[in-house]
Image (cartoon, rainbow, N blue to C red; front, side, top):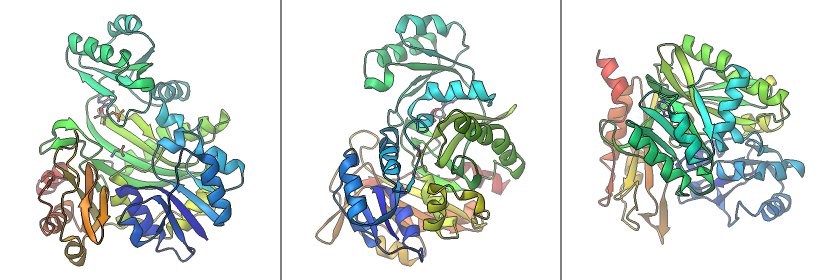
Length: 425
Ligand code: AMP
Ligand code: GLY
């Protein structure tokens, strides 16, 4: 089978690496890909917003499965157009992708399906929003409704901050994403992410992870796409996981199907583990980045076969997903300036040496300038290792990080700190 993988970050390098291990695979194509993905795939120049051209490519190259990595093509309806033409695709249709594409849509769904989540109000004007603020205690959470590349969430400690946030959103700073806003109750607890594959009916758990969103050690500084992650997130115990499936994932999948927008793909639930039990913060319609990297390190199976089974609605026939007991941990090496404007072109050496030590270095934002790998993005490398404990995985990942010479880059030195502290007791 030929597979087309869309995307070009660390998440897609991890997917390409696993897909390439499938005995089912003939040729893996990737667009746009990156130098890491190029080790496993033939890179092709395809614009994912040009659905006609993607479809033509699939037909000409006998593509048996399209794997869509990022959210934008999903929210844009690429999966709908491929499915309509009979091309199996891993990733939800446009209506189902609203679970990521519209925070208000998801909150309303939670209300209809009685899914535990923060209290909220949807507002479409500054005046309406200011009036709605009276219904919430401080701090209060202000969110742009649409996709805002992870930047559309503001936690306001004071009324003034809340009003400033509302001004920013309604003044168009987030474009169309901010035309509608969700105001939410602030929840407290530890965050964890849970992943489940679903074909619209059957549900197969795909493990848990914990991300580190802030740029600096000790969870300080601005938010990023994620500076590191580990899996599993042991705070999400088996009992809590069962609760999440029963009270959050299953009602979501069932309601989406019942309402004529079945969700097919991976459902990534961002959770707050509150005193009242797990509550949904948000859904993503794709694997997380860098959470995917640690999940793929633990995944033991034929990824192509499994994703095809999701795409073809045969997930009920699959056995449980096998994930290694070991902990996987990834450290993001970013370019100086990130999450602002990252410095481009910085030289990187030592990737092969880090890989040779048993770590796995995924390329996230690199380019190949005639054999030399240089930085070409904010998040540049994901240095990933496994261990019997988080402490062990962390030590192995940082030993590999220290083997890499990337003078214009930086990383957090404390990925996994919560769990390492718990392990030390
Ligand atoms: P989101 O993009 O919805 O995942 O939000 C980004 C981050 O904001 C989350 O990972 C949480 O840390 C925080 N956050 C979002 N919503 C809430 C909430 N209702 N209560 C507390 N923190 C939240
Ligand atoms: N690491 C967070 C995300 O992929 O949304």
